[in-house]
Image (cartoon, rainbow, N blue to C red):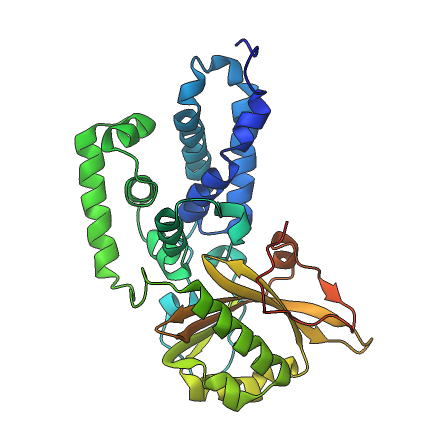
Length: 336
C-alpha cells in the first residue's frame, strides 16, 4: 500500500488507541487486559497493513481485529464481577474471606487511557457513564456477541449496518441481539441516580474533603460525606459493607492500619480516584490500594479499594512515597 502523502500507518493506528482501549475494557472488564488486547490489535494491524485497501476503512478494520482479540481472550473465562454482585453486604467485624483470583473481578482503568478530554462534553459525559464499575460489571453478564453489539450500538453509537459488517452478520441479527442485551441490563436494575448529571466541580470538592478527612483520619468529617447506602469494597477480598456506620466501624477496626496514610489523587472509570499509601517502619509510605470513588446527589456513594500493587504503575502513580509527599486534591492529577 503506497505511503506517499499519508501519515505513517503506525502514527495513524495510534490515533485509535484510546477508543480501542475503551472498547476492549468494556468487553473484558480489566484495564490491564484491555491494554494487552489493544497492543495485540496494533501488532496484528501493522503486520497486515498492506491488506487494507482503503485508509478510510481503517477504523472499522481495527475494531474488527480488536473484537476478535477480545473474543479470543474471553474464551471460557469466568464472568468478572464486583463484590456487590457476589453476595449480600457483611458486618464490619465479619471475616474478610479468602482472596479470590484476580480474573474474578472487574478491575479499574485510568481515565487517561480511554477518555479524550477535548471530546464533545455530551459525548464525554456519556463515555464516563459507560465506564462506571457497575455498568462494566453488568456488561459481563451478556454473551460476548450481545456485549459487543450493546457497546457498539449504545456506547459508541455505530449504525446497525456498521455493526453487522464488523460482526459478519445481518442487521436483523444485530437488532435482535441488542434487544436481548437491553432486556438483560434492565433486569439488573442498575442504580442510575445522578447518572447523567455529573457535576465535576462537585466531584472535585467531595474528593478534596474526603482526602482531607482520610489523611486526618477524622471519621466524623469522613462519614458526613457518605450516602446512607454508600458501598465500601476491597477486591480481591469478597467482604463489602454498606452505610456510614459500617464503613466507620471497618475503618476503626480492620482498616485502622490506614491511619496516618497519604493519598495521591487521579481519575478512573469516569470519576475521582486515588492511591492510598500506608506508613512503613522505614518512615516512608508504600502503595496499598487504588480507590475508585463514586458519587451521587452530592455525596459519596461508593469507595472501591483495589488492593493490587501493579495498579499503581497502570495509573502512573509511584509505588512508594517519601515522607514529604501529600495528597493534593485541589486539582486531579492526570498520569502520563
